[in-house]
Amino acid sequence: MTRSLAGRRPIWRSPSITLGLTVAVAAAVGCSSPRDGAVPDDRRQATNPMTNRPVINIAHRGASAYAPEHTFASWDLALEMNADYLEQDLQMTADGVLVVMHDDTLDRTARGPEQHCSGPVIERTLAELENCDAGSWFNEEHRDRVRPEFEELRIPTLEAVFERYAGRARFYIETKNPAAAPGMEEELLRLLHAFDLVPAALDDHTVILQSFSPASLMKLRDLEPTLPRVQLAPWGETTVSIRAQLDEVATYAQGLGPHYSDVNTALLDDAHELGLMVHPYTVDAPEEMRRLIEIGIDGMFTNVPDVLGALER
Image (cartoon, rainbow, N blue to C red; front, side, top):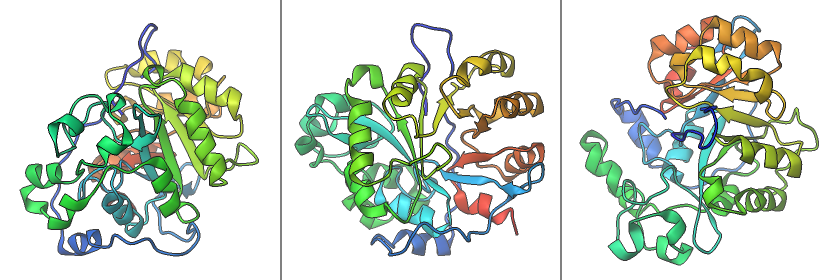
């Protein structure tokens, strides 16, 4: 989540934090095969003291402090850590396939033949991306968390994500660069329908959609109004400027995703008064998690879902 709005006053990146890898976590990362079972509802969670409801634990690109972001290894581990949601950032290929990758270019997280695995995602076909490995970069950058199997990871399609996790996970999906990828929203909805993930009512939060683009969220509202939507706010906005836009946001979204540093009691009160849930990004420090929980946050994105889950104990 790192995009601001173009052509209007911005309605809204996330710092990466390096954390130690425990022996237990390292063992869990090795689990790469899907598990059977429905979406679990008996997880131990931190509780919002203002509402006495669980604080939603959203795995930011998976358990991405411990495994390469947006890979099956990272999402599998997030489920092992009892995350409530798995996040997916969407990019579209040159041949119209939705793949899951944060950056709009391949250079940071893809390795392989330069002619296939560098440059803008939208200029590469899916067949080209199948030549790229999506895990070696993590081993390069995190020498204390190197695992040989990460080098075998590939860039997943959204369809493959649904094939692996539908029925046993909840999804928090971002449309990224939608203006540069016409048809992104329609293809997303086609896949959601194909996997029976479009809810009958807006209060079903099995899937939550988010974007920095109000236009994308409005389009999704018009095409499929029962899917809940969250407006992301760019890092660098002020609490005051975000609060000033909440009335407008509430006309097309059910939630707000600000940077955690912008969240205070006043923002929460204003958002909640309008019926907006608030899910800030990206919170890894336990003391910041506690602060947000104490003022009544609804949920948060984290690279360390195990840390957030442990606060309940």
